[in-house]
Length: 50
Image (cartoon, rainbow, N blue to C red; front, side):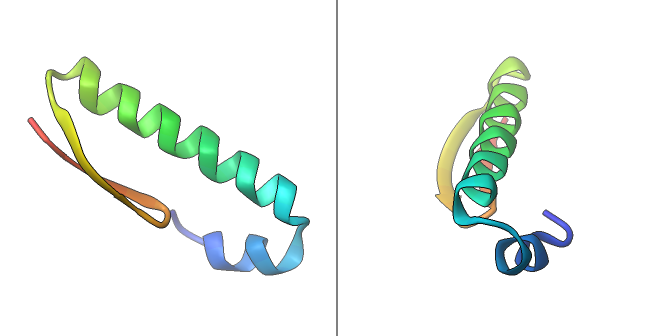
């Protein structure tokens, strides 16, 4: 996620956590909607296979 390091340092940890959680949730839904599976979560990215 572009710029994610800066908002972790500039904002509260709760806001940063909500942004990460929402981003990962949406990304995982997209992968699953395309028939894929999530193989791992690593920081601000997911790895999925279709």
